[in-house]
Amino acid sequence: MFIDRVVIRVEGGTGGSGCTSFRREWRTPMGGPDGGEGGRGGSVIVRGDSNLATLLDYTYRDKWIAERGEHGMGSNKSGRGGADIIMPVPPGTILRDNETKEILAEILEDGQEVVIAPGGRGGKGNSFFATPTHQSPREWQPGEEGVVHTIEMELKLIADVGLVGQPNAGKSTLLSVISAARPKIADYPFTTLQPNLGVVQLSDHRTFVVADIPGIIEGAHEGKGLGLQFLRHIERTRILAFLIPIDAMDWQAEYDQLRREIAEYSPDLAAKPHCVVFTKMDLLGEEYAPPIQAPGAFGLFAISAAAREGLDALTTAWWTELLRLKQSVRPEDVTLSLP
Image (cartoon, rainbow, N blue to C red; front, top):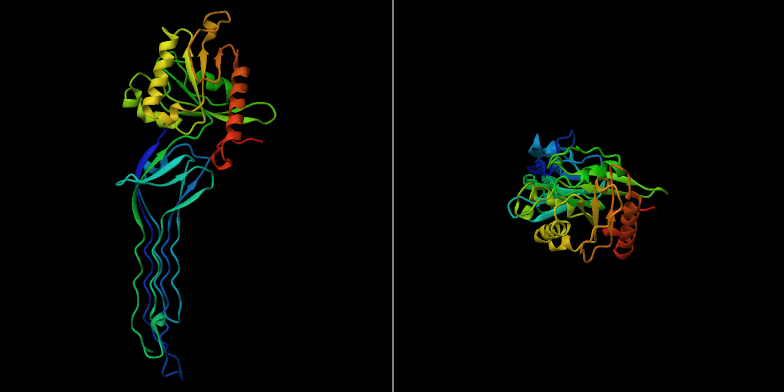
């Protein structure tokens, strides 16, 4: 099951309290204070894990509380610190405060860690308060409470190329042919009910990631169809490929509608480089370049995934555009892994 949005409660562990204690040793009648400090509470840490592709685990457990620190002890012994909790999430996860909707952190890489709920500091024991004029202090500090958050975790898949098209445009078939992904394929609309990722491997160890997004219909930016549920998954893609089946009633109208839905959802998304891909060309039985006005597109391609035709030219063009983008942005902004 693909889960891309959950709300959970996280609590850092409470720090241990300080101790009030005095030395009691043989032949030491005036033993001084020796109360130790409490241990720090454990923290809740979110860590990126590339082996995960969904937030499903967090639907079964909605409260994560780190261990509290132990109290201080006599003989100036400090309490043990509480154990941290590690919460693995897929790269591309955004963490928001559920009330204010403020973004607390974004996990973009495998192994990246963010302390989302720090543990509380341990309290001081009475030995800390000893001075030359206050030699028998009985003061001590309680441990601090850990940070508490109710957070919303939202997953936005990270891919290099996003396949955009109406239901039955051939997105899943294309992904299954150019990668090892095996999305569900059938001859009825809305076959794809969740995003799918596939790694495309070219020669010389060149690879990039393609995302198949469920079909977009008119009004998707307002939530119609699968709407907003999955449109956000193409926000992190670097290139958009608009797929138009050759048997569509009006190629130009379908392209314009897809562009309009993307622009209504996010102007920034609409500004990303894009190309137009005509699919199911095997239905014609001949090579044909449909006339279409696509200003700003870096290419128009005609393919048949079923017949394995036109795919090399398409994937090579995607790779070339990704290389161009890599050279024009800062290294830390690049999600593409290049040799």
